[in-house]
Structures are given as structure tokens and as C-alpha cells.
Image (cartoon, rainbow, N blue to C red):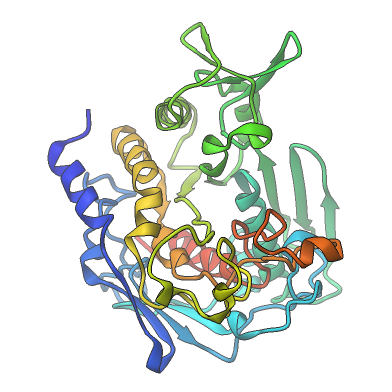
Length: 400
């Protein structure tokens, strides 16, 4: 059971205000977030990270978005980007969203270096496991690496289901994406999709022997109707047509946590879990948070070209319950992963979604950005997932 102090602290922090200093074009998060909940239990992977370069305490996930014209780190011509993420190729007219760099509050982090990544990972494997946000991040990392090496350096590409892989042959480094929306297994039983909350063996067989694992899940647990990815849930031998999504999420994450504790030697394999990536469908909050684009689009990120201008509890609240579940599961693990806590810094980036610039949409779809055609869940590439990977790179190589 969650500690009452832990619960009350979380609910307090979920209402923390994100502040954007528009006049100087950067955004900042209130320093109270520094204590958040990530380190409420002193596991080796959960202590406040330390930069090995200067031994100073570094709050990676507290900081500011700073304009930096040396960005982006690669171009939209990168061959690995799916159409749904390639906003510039599909007509997005603005480019300012590409020019923001994350600056942690009390430390400097090294700029991502693709060649350095490959040299440090030579002969090793990296695997992203999760939903399409994981695929978003996987493609970002491949493009970031590719930008740092010769264009003639050979790569071997294999795209499939559930596993897609890119191998940088000169360095013997493999970077893969394994699709597992819920992490736990889904089986077909009598023609029905059964989400098996207590079983992960089918998916997890593909994760064995990997040197670095980065997991994510979250969005699909709350989908209903035609977007729901299962017909029944199975837990402890019983079948359910419906279940509280938070209860189901906790059951699934605990199954994942037990598997990690029992099957991963963390002295050999590095394990990361990425926190929940926020969506930006304008369902509430102060109108001042949305610029002119939102005047004509009541439920869409369409037209948003700058970061959040003064955060709202609407966005932190939306993920507080899921974060509480994730934090509780990680706290109770014997070998917890390093939590890449990207939720708050991503919440500020309402400008960074594909919106209607996500592949070959019809003229009718582009003309109605209020509706489902506007993608306010995934992220443009180049774009925000590059920052996720910058933080991943920092945590992987430069933190104690």
C-alpha cells in the first residue's frame, strides 16, 4: 500500500504550476518539482543523478526550454522517420519548434554525439519496448546517431512486427524497437483479444540478452471503443470485459516489474523506464496557455507554435494517477529501472506535435483539425523526442 505521505505529496505536486517567461522566450518549471516523488525511496538507480564530469548534483528533469539556433540535431530528410512523424516533409509551415534546447536548472549536459554513442556502445544492443511513443523515440535516436557519422557508414535495416531493427554495422551496434502496447501479452482466445495482465513471457522472450532496455507504456490503457486494443482482460484466472484502467495498469506494471527483478541482471543490462508522454488536446485550462491557433480550434494542438505559456494543473493532473501507479511499482521493485521523467518538460511543448502534418491526409482531414486527423499525441521529428534521447544519453553515460 502507498505511503500516505507519498500520496499527499504527489497530489500537492500534481498542482504545481509550470511558468513560461514569454518575454525572453523560455519556459521554466517551479523548483518545488525538484523534490517530486522520483526519489522517495533510496534505490541506487533512483537517487538524484550526479554528473560524472563535475560531481555536481544535477536535476535533469527540472529546467528551462531555451532558444538555440544550432538545433535541430538532424534534418527531416533522415530516411528512418515515418511519415506520421515527418512534419516538415508534410507541409508544416513553421520551424521555431525545432529551435528549443532543454537546459537543466543546475548543470550543463553534453550535447548529443552520435559517434560517441556508437563508440561507447560498440558491440552492444539497445531496445525500445512499448507503444508508438517508443517508436517515435527510437526513430529519433537512429537519426541522431546517423547525423554524427559518415553518410557512407553501412546500416542494416529490418522493419517488421513486433520487432524492427537498425544495425550500424561498422560499430556492431543494434538499435531496435519492439512493439508491446501494454508490455504484458495479448493472446487470441476463441477469436477474442485477451490482455493477459499476469503474463509477459511471450513478449519478454525478445528482451533477453539486450544490453540496454528502455520501456514505455500508458496511452493504450485508457482507450475505449474502436481504439481499445483488447476484448477481454484476464487476471488471476478470471476474465473481465471492463476494469478500472488504473487497476489494470498497476497489475500489468507489477507483472513487468516481477519479470525485470527475476530475469534481468542489472550489473549487465541497463534498464530505463520512460514516464508518460502528454497529449495536448485543448480540453480545458486557461485560454492564455493557447496562442492564436487555438481560437479556431477548440480541441486541437493545430496552430500552436510556441511552448506552453504558463502551465496548468489540467496537464499535470491528467497524468498524476498514472504516475502514482508507476512510482509505486518502481518503488517496490528490487532492481528498479532509471526513471526518465520526461512528463513535465514535455507538457510544456504543446507546439511540438504533428497536428495535421502527419502524412498524406486528405484535404477534408486537413480542413478539420478539430477532429481526429490532428495528431496531438505523437511528436514531430526532428523535435521533442530528440530531447528525450539527449537525457537518455546523459543518464546512460554521464551519471553515477
